[in-house]
Length: 105
Image (cartoon, rainbow, N blue to C red; front, top):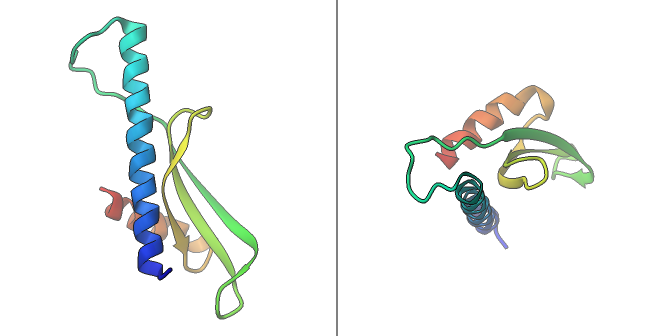
């Protein structure tokens, strides 16, 4: 599998998980509020970012791989909506997040 194929698969799974989560949340809101139509409310959801250095996984130059993930949803139902490799680990997480958000919006 090429890197492009892996990125496309990651994006497709993230899109599907996000859509599934949002559908579940909307169904829950409709049931709990008795709302049967669009009430003009803007749905809010949790967004968390989590960076991890992958133990035992190294890149071609021998450095450890570091990933950042964007998680959506409440803690008990969170899904990974998108993830990306961070070039340079922790000091570059903010750059990776900025680029991740640009590709997902």
